[in-house]
Length: 303
Ligand code: A3P
Image (cartoon, rainbow, N blue to C red; front, side, top):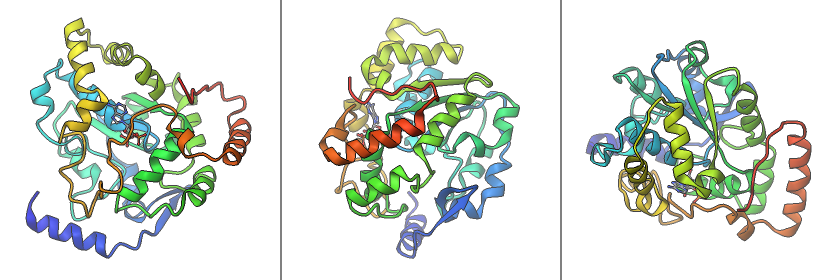
């Protein structure tokens, strides 16, 4: 990265007050709220592909899979740039860099884009143009644990506090990008109205090749078994952990401090068991039951 931009970025982070703003009751970094009209009025194109997730659901994993599907498994070309450069994140303004929407607008088609927005806040042009969306959902307990670490690592997000504190904050939906419950349910309800493929992180862990095939069929790409195997191999946890284009090691530690926890942390189903106290688990299950009742959604918290 350009040393001048790095210096400005360091300055931005040093002066950050981590105040969060709200859009329709959903918490976002203030820098997102400041450009909200611009985000909401973003113009999608019919051949865009959008990867949508609640934070920590496996966004980077799916981005990498889709990129490789579009490239027919060409690993060398998939390594042309870090994942966060290849795939603009339309919800953010990583000052002093351009906004995610400006970066996306300057990109040639076909574009692969990323969002963490809940469905009700997605720029309407995505839905009007019936853009293909791949939504990855991950069980709330593992998402909570992963986000707890990530809010310590990512220096542009507020510190999560203690695990006890974070447990309550997350359950109350007072984390950046809002309530996990509203997010997964909102996208689930929309999935049959639009071209939305709803994929579960736990299914990807269980049988990555099966899920990659599902995504490629959804995108209208019929890939050979060899290509599917290549994509499977290149997007395995171990391969992505070692790949500087996917493990965020190109970012300086004043942005992502991976000495606290690596971005590619565990990549497992059920790590929540190492963090949830028995009492927390009881509270969680009770809240979960109430919030998810009648949603028709079923998550696995262990395999
Ligand atoms: P953990 O913190 O539980 O390890 P996101 O990209 O949405 O921020 O999600 C990050 C989470 O997905 C992290 O979870 C990370 O380890 C996991 N992840 C990323 N790539 C993965 C892969 N190839 N296989 C399994 N998990 C992966």
